[in-house]
Structure formats: C-alpha cells, structure tokens
Image 1 (cartoon, rainbow, N blue to C red):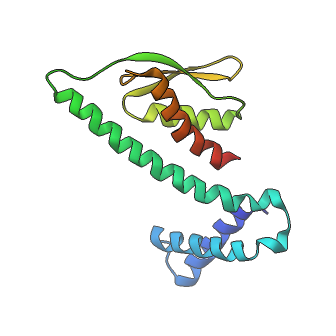
Image 2: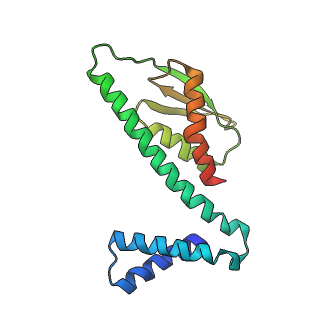
Image 3: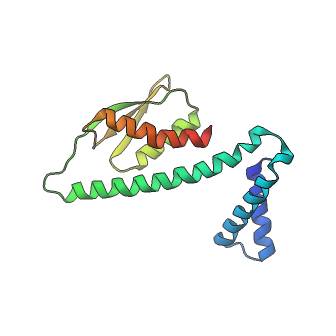
Length: 160
C-alpha cells in the first residue's frame, strides 16, 4: 500500500473517530496522518515510497505559486482591458522542456494555459518544447526564462 493510500485511509479513520467527515476534519486527519507516516517512513525502507514526503510539500508549493501567478496575470490582463493603450506584445515562442514524462508535460501545459495571457498551442513531436502564445512577450527570452525558472521548475520538483 502506498503512502498516499495510507494517508487517505488515516484521514478517513480520523474523520470516523471525530464523528465528522467535514472537509476541515478530513484535512486535519490528512495532516496528522502525513506527520505519523513521516515518522514511520524508516520502517518501510523503500526510497521510492519515501519520495511521497518530498512530492506532497512540493505540490503544495506549486499550487500556491500557481495561485500567485494567476492573480498577477489576472490583474495585468484586467489592467490592459481597461487601458486606453494596452501594453500588449503578442508572440508565439518555443519553450524548451527537455526530457519529461507525459504527465509532467500535461500538467505544465495546462498550468500555462490556465494562466491568463498565455496559451499552450502545441507540444513538439519529440516532446522537446512547447509552443506557447503570450500577449506579454515583449522580450521572448525573458518570458522563456521566467517560465523555466518558475512553473517548469516547480512541476519538475513535484514529479522527480
């Protein structure tokens, strides 16, 4: 049984013990179960299973990073919608992504598309780059560097 499955099971048991399956109670049980499993991780001895304890916190970091980028880009798009002379510089750029699994490419492409002002158009046949349209690509190299050091880096941290 994987750590994730055990963690969900512990959250359900926690809810049953408290007599409430409210989302806040289940979240508390999930966090308590995560802590309990973290202390017991050496008993399993499987390094592949123990990577759960690195991936879950990095997924939380990715989530909050995405929320920050979403809010920032929403404000930029809203500002340009009401401005007399919007500062738009649309362009299509290739974002090199290197070797990635299909799931990593899927998550990265969708996070880019969900951010206002950017859109993933295509994935290269050999999965070496994403074709992205951005309305704020005044400096294409800066846009690529920002996406690589931000979203792509955090996605890689979750899955590796």
